[in-house]
Image (tube, rainbow, N blue to C red; front, side, top):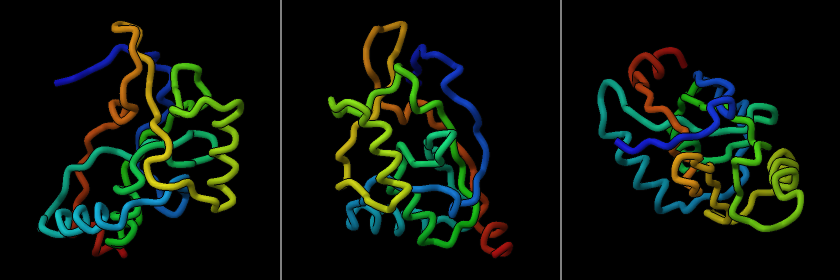
Amino acid sequence: MYSIDFDKSIIKNISPLNIDSLFPHEKIFSKKSSTLTNFLKSFDDYIIISSIICCSKSKVIIDGHHRYFTLKKLGFKKIPVTQIDYFSEDISTGINEENIKHKIIADALNGNLLEPKSTSHKIFSHKSKTWEPIILLSSLSKIEIKNDQESQ
């Protein structure tokens, strides 16, 4: 198991959210989404998936665009989400531009999506003094397939 030492106050909440309350900031690779869709369709009762990471204030997706678009395509209403303090100095976008986080949020809320994988969000690990992939803040979640489909 891989873990990092980070400022725990960055995580604001971990819970299922209505999928329509989230805003992507990047486009996706359709081939990667199709592969994920086919994989998830192969399960009968439930799937285990990493939570989507989003800004706790704006609900803009920071990590998990392919998971988000795939789950939306499959008709899921609620998905697991880890909400974070996106404006923490311990979170990097991978883009060296002043006020880039504000621009990412504004563009996402206006529907102006960046190209796939154009950001590389990272979290600072205080123990190793290195920047690590932000997906490490995700939680694994079990999503019941039959229950979710029946509630639609």
